Image (tube, helix red, strand yellow):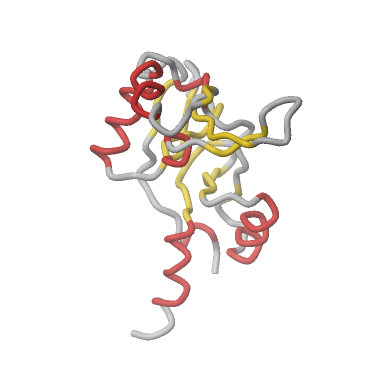
Length: 150
């Protein structure tokens, strides 16, 4: 099976200068777990996933303590709303993950899974001759099981 057989279209994209408020609205309206970030020429520059809005636990510099951080801001137990409020006008290129791991349209699903495991990623944009044509998320891999019986 090829990547093209399980990829999803159309893609949901935003521009690098799109505010995080608008990114969140787009993701909610389109019911997607990520958006691809494009520059002014339409080239892929990054990816923003729903996990970027949750944040990650990070080590505090020069300390053995760890604390949650979202949008580059440390927050305590009661500060999540404050951090999100302050970040609404930040733009996509400030928080997007880059570079983006992609896969070719005609590549095998086996290679896709290997890449996802090796890079510990959940979504992979699909390209064909250098142009974005789709995306595959872990959820789309369910098609492998569902296709077996009809």
